[in-house]
Image 1 (cartoon, rainbow, N blue to C red):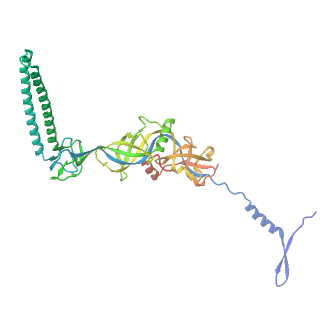
Image 2 (tube, helix red, strand yellow; image 1 turned 90 degrees about the vertical axis):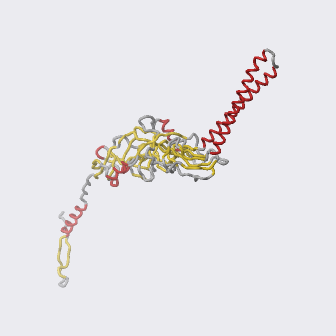
Image 3 (cartoon, rainbow, N blue to C red; image 1 turned 30 degrees about the vertical axis):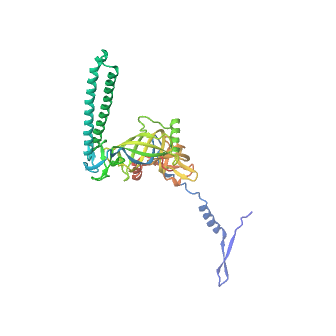
Length: 409
């Protein structure tokens, strides 16, 4: 069968009405060429470049942050213990005083007179006792010879005992008068920084009650009190019981560091000193107290500070950079580079922040290559071109910040 030839008539010249025959196969050839170009397979994309870092295992401190308030290690109220006119103040307000330093003088005149009276009565009682004893000694041999009645001797013996009792009362009165006279010199009972004078000189003090004159605060070391939620305390006890958190030497447990109101870290660390044995029913918290050395006296009573309390250490903890974790509506994920440089999505159970890292509780093992940069171009099973991730200045600065476990997720 002969091939069929197709042709197309087109007008050569519309004015002359002549027609031109054009083979259709020429048009078909051009159309086929276009279709071949469109049907050509697209070129394969190169692997996406990503930055990766290996997940690491460390023993991390179990830190929690609280707001604490500084209190003096010992705060002693200086009070007037006897009644009288406050004659003189012997200290400079706000200065350091030593135990035994003279702080105030109260008019001693009435107490000196009372002491003289007591001493005179003491001397009189001593003389009467000496006389009564001499009489008893004279009558003792006479009663044996029946030269005097037994009643006379008994009266002499009773007089001795009575004068002994009177002398004891006189001695007590002398001691009381001496003590009261000593109270007119108000001395410091504790070394520390003395506060403001609360009573001016010339005022009557000590009438009816011991007048508060000033306060001495010991500040070479201070207390810092803070409150822990009962829920956090229960969680920590459970972690300790399960062995996931260790305490003891080398873990830094029961240690506290302070950050001052200006954000700077205090140069010394403190130790746990006291834990309340019951929960405050109005706040649901337990009060803890640490003792902080304060040789430079930067910490002042009433100051609010940030307390970073180390309760123990958690061994075998997996850490990855915060940048490697993506938060989704259903949780947290990370991308891991596996064999043949193919990425795999991992669902994570995260803990808290530690410096610039996340603590990973479930979902990752040690030494796995986790994608840190280039996350948004990844798909399950895609081939990538990994290269090591190096922390930038911002991450380094974050790592230099204080460790804090307990940050919000």
